[in-house]
Image (cartoon, rainbow, N blue to C red; front, side, top):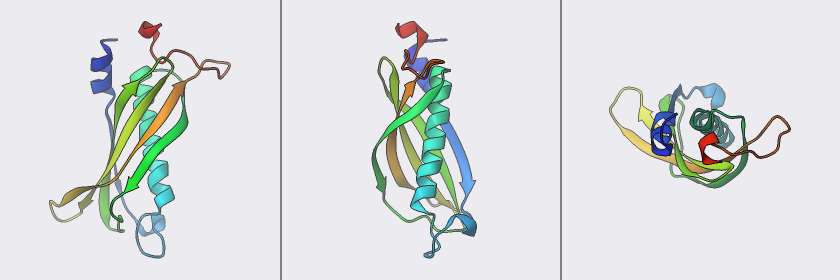
Length: 132
């Protein structure tokens, strides 16, 4: 499976989305809850790719909304393993916003999500087999 560092590098996960009016609020910007949903999803995929185990979200760290995300923009969600415990891992997620018709790109939301690996009885289990 490789070293922990190699697994961290291989598990980085990126998802691109277009922000359409159906996902925006009355200010024509992405709902905060939609951003959180997307962040949790990309973090889950990253944690699963890292551990290749069943994982569940156990907490979020601080989520910083630095700038509103208007309809008609593109976003990229980037998830990376930040730290690894015995049964859990912490995933850092950034959302980058790009204008559709220019090179402008900036970080607009950042936060962390913690996941725990669970066995068939939904009990915590080592996140990596070779860390037992």
